[in-house]
Image: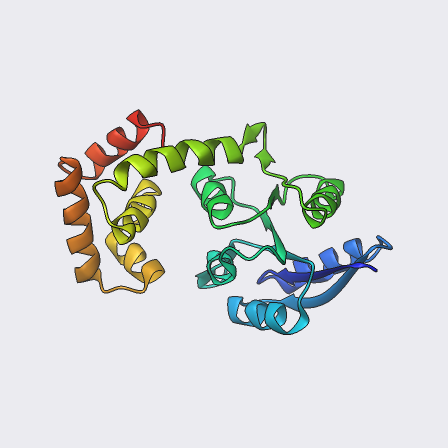
Length: 209
């Protein structure tokens, strides 16, 4: 049985080229190419692929929505294929359940090996020599300490603040009003005894976040 693949990327040329490349492998079969998060989720729910290949940066939206939708599901395995080398993006993808992370700049052979690894139940989370799983473990330790003072929603806000998002972007990502975000941010600073964003960044760095 071939490894069935759903690809989500907002560049049709990339999708076509990637499909041709992957279909050269006799054990791969691309069953859907999607250019939006909504189309990708529909394909996943109806076609039940083995592996999803996901770009993080789509036009006017981001691929994190797919990872949030899938939650803690074991299947399908998600491989993030991205041009972003922002470590915050890559760590967030791993935190949300991506089992593989591959930069678009690497050789195609790397993607093929990653797909086979995650399909077999493994992980492919080392990017440019850094193990995302190890960094993620550090973050979870820091978040466990903060969770004694913060609510789960406030922790979500902290993650986005750590990635230097402004209040408007945090509101969009969490589907909240900007006013509600401002209240959450105020509570974060108050509960952690901090004076502002710069102080928060220093606090997180000290915690190894």
